[in-house]
Length: 88
Image (cartoon, rainbow, N blue to C red; front, side, top):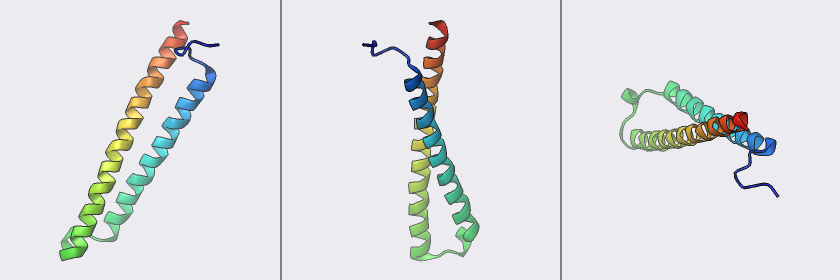
């Protein structure tokens, strides 16, 4: 049985897939923000409509930050795993 710290091709592949999934999610979030901001401008929005979009924009921004943080953490893990596998 392999040590829990053993780097296997399966582990590396799993990490790469997770990074790709997060990158795709991040790309979709960014595209949604771009599309929505192109549809209308804040200047033309009043009252409840503006408040609803700002709330939605905050949620998307938070999701972007979370996805970015996860992507950075996984990239750091990948870098560590790759450096460890190169030394082995």
